[in-house]
Length: 270
Length: 321
Image (cartoon, rainbow over all chains, first blue to last red; front, side, top):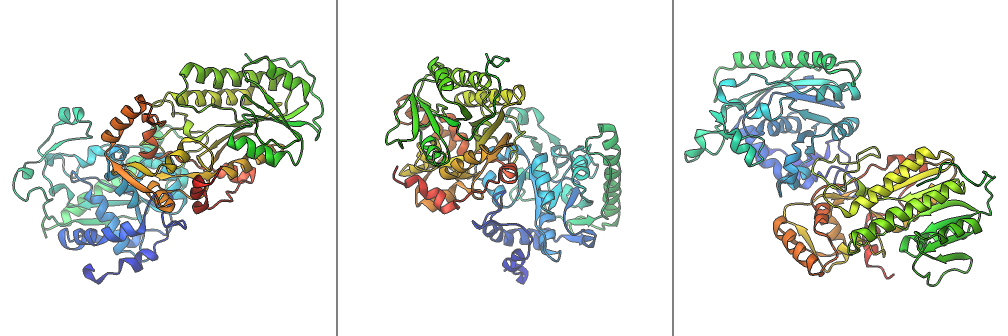
């Protein structure tokens, strides 16, 4: 096992509710997770050499992780998941919300489900938080992950859904600043017309893909900064303006964490 | 249309009154009748004959769309109507399907209102929600009924469900219960059981959705619970915990035949038009996307618990009828 870690032992300590059939209600299968973990551990420990700050800020029980989205493919989610599983004690299982579009893809849909990833809709999110799970959301959505290089580390508009969810379920929000993702694939533009005809969420133009070996993400060093838990109070059905103010607080906090993280970073690749 | 004014003055329901079961000759109808006739009189309505019928069960062989249905209400004092007489024959013409399912049900509702029947239980289905890539993992009773968007044959069932909902609000003196069970398995001849009975079960390559199944006896149990006093409203029903489709096939020891979606769809369309299969092509979505329900309400309010564990539920499709 990579790094001498015993994933089976760790996974047995994760607080998830498995039925007698060995699956959780969302279709997660610990066997699939254990099989995939060495590859995830390789990305986390060797390839991106993730540095983690502030995991002690994670509260017990339900928590909503709010992170900036970057990097064209959602490796940021993978690494946050790896952190929660490998660098937190007791280990936690991180649920991310996937695009409903992914459910129409063969193999991908099954893989996501077995890995415990859940279709993004409010009902699913609420159910997970009520089960005291850790839920990762990227309020920027696709706009965030497909940013071009000139807009790197600039947060796009946040959706309001995550705040309504936190208010409805009284869940603390932990902002997570992800540094290093924006440089893994350098996108110089977006072929949005082609993307639309192909029904893709976005189609970034990435020159490195045309070079041998450039299909792999560049081995930048990831740095994950977990902020202090923020709790909000109010009515989850408030008007957009009222909820929007609270969202703006989270966005400002996260942007300043990102800026600080960038300032502290000495080099992109090490 | 349903007449507002009822002709019969309300009278105190007595224990001697009968339970009327429509579609009694189906698998579920016969099982339910066998449970209920021990406690009180049971009257059945179906256009099929009732073979090996217990002596104390009255059976009226008639078409629900006919006036004769009213005579049944006239001749027996009825304390409850259980509506199971929904046609699910994908081969029937859509006009026939519609007039049987919707016009027949409207007639039934009219008499329930007119004769002041204190209880109405309608067996709908979780299929009214429909499988979809953006479904919540567990649909609650207030989820929209989108099952007809892709598959027109479901529209009748949605209409029946909606009519029952309308009746619920318009006639508060009748306690109306709508049950929406997940895939029912058993010796019953329905699409999910027939599908699992195939010697080689075709599946969609790369798709393995979570599936809820429940044993036909558990549905009968829930129907009986819905007849209890004071119970009204819509209830989802699920059986044991959900598992991926592939696990169901493993449990049955069936060989699965994974085919790419487009290929299987094409084959199925061709076979359907040649009448070589009774699975309409749009039903492929059921083995592609989730359509599962949250049955917490039924468990809390009806006191429903599934008695059959997963292995037995799945094995029941191979039982002799």
